[in-house]
Amino acid sequence: MIIDRLENIGKYAALHPLFPEAVAFLRSHDLATLQPGQIVLQPGRLWVNVEQIAPKAKAEARVEAHRDFMDIQLPLSHVETMGYTPEAECRPADAEYSADQDIVFFDGPARQYFTLEPGMFAVFLPGEGHAPAISDTGGTKLVFKVKI
Image (cartoon, rainbow, N blue to C red; front, side, top):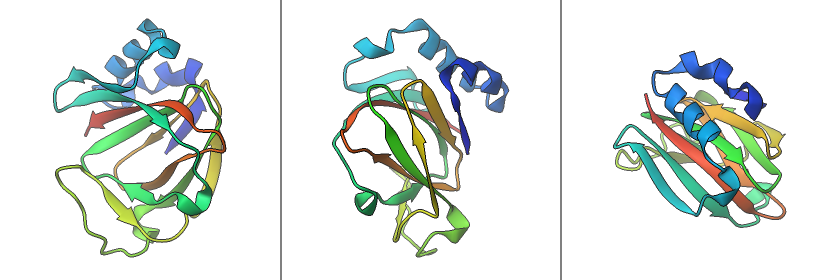
């Protein structure tokens, strides 16, 4: 997991061959004007979901993990809390994985929590359990899906 400020995102370009394209998108678009929906940058390999999230309490946030994609998540208009738990520590360990949606959900709260403000981002690699979209107000966020 990586947490940093958006102005530093270029430092992580070597993390994955598709990461520079996500960075270029962020630098070349007026993020405040993006409309909810999906923007495909490379079919099946890289896209960004522009999401409008509703208010959600910690107790409502489910820990999830992915196997084939990393997430780059950044709130645009709100403060967002996210939970983190290594997948090996998630309960139950035998939760059913959905291959077509590349997601598995777990029971119980996240092990730890952190807060992102607009201008910050988090990267979750496969196997990193995360409970996103915890917010008192809700708002707009971006979620990049990057094929590993």
